[in-house]
Length: 104
Image (cartoon, rainbow, N blue to C red):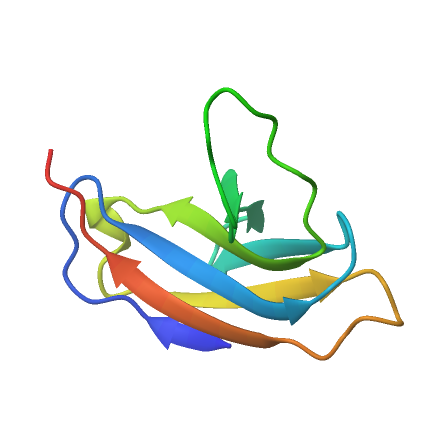
């Protein structure tokens, strides 16, 4: 999907949610800004059933959200977002994107 970014503040980021079963470690997300090399999303988080600090969190094969930090100078630029699914048996997913603001 391609979208044009609105005005941005320091600390803003995109959250790309890959909803559905995609297989263990079988989805990656990339962003491509016009005139620049494609980049990967540097952070992600699975949809945890529980996140108790004393216990290890189990591996997940579904429902990850990927996070891409943005810069104020990215405002007004088009960005193409891609979810790369690497498990041919698990490709029935839906992707949603949110622009998130973090107070700094």
